[in-house]
Image (tube, rainbow, N blue to C red):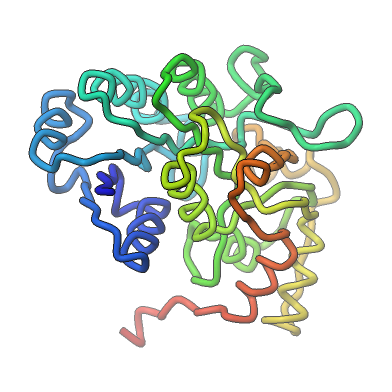
Length: 296
């Protein structure tokens, strides 16, 4: 097994690097600072030189500090999240190279009519086709459409990543740093379990296709803040917006996805993932705070 990782220096890409290093698996970490793999000719050259047996596409455009930035940089967002994955599919087909694409659960909103989580069989309901989404979510949904007929591709849906390491991209860090929060129920994903689960879909040779990779269950924002107070910051006070309308008026320019996903398909394929409460508790008990500039 030799894996080529695109976007290896990003928040998600680094999790793949950690996983492969810890397992002593051979990998090639590619970043655009080294090679512009968004050019199909350069991607072909990279594959020819590295000779991988599997490719991970962890590259994409998320916007900084959040998805609101995608609303004003739509060209880069569209290319990074929708056009580029299509190119990767074409090149991997040329090389007969199996691969996996990091997608997002943000292409859904809410839950199924009976309150259960959306499955891989449910069509996205937070996309350009419904005209109700953020630009980021719309582009992620487009990519899934483009890759739907690729017979050698995994589509891995990540949802609100977190782990024990303080980071601007970590959901727990965001909750602790935002001045006011939105109460919402969501499925969320432990970042390092995500990288492990993605890799295992290939290692175990489960059928190609789409997989919701979220920790089992779902949580309210207030339930997570209560856990933060219990295990990490007992004196931390949290403030919530009275409703989503106020949140949109005061803190956001793009609609937000809040949704529940069903990860049964992943578990039935023999790939383990912990209950969300357990993953959160472990992360908070082992929290590593980001070093301040003064201490570096």
